[in-house]
Image (cartoon, rainbow, N blue to C red; front, side, top):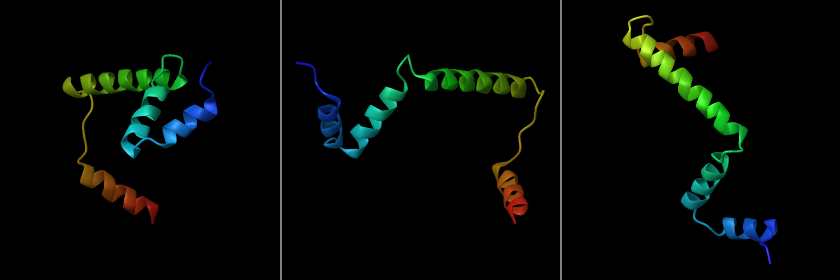
Amino acid sequence: MPTSLKQILEQARALSTEDRAKLVNSLLESPDSPQSDIEKAWAEEIEQRLAAFDRGEISAYPAEDVFADARRISR
């Protein structure tokens, strides 16, 4: 007899916080998940930005400057 969704949820709630987080991440990373397409797109974007930085095509800003600008703008 197949396990019902209700039974699975009860079992999942009995897991530790760490194991529940692992379960959620595992479900989100499933191949049919649109999230995996988004993550792939971000991974490609990150690789492209890193390559451009390495080639000297873009510059970086210290995190302190970024946060200072954000605080200034949000006031």
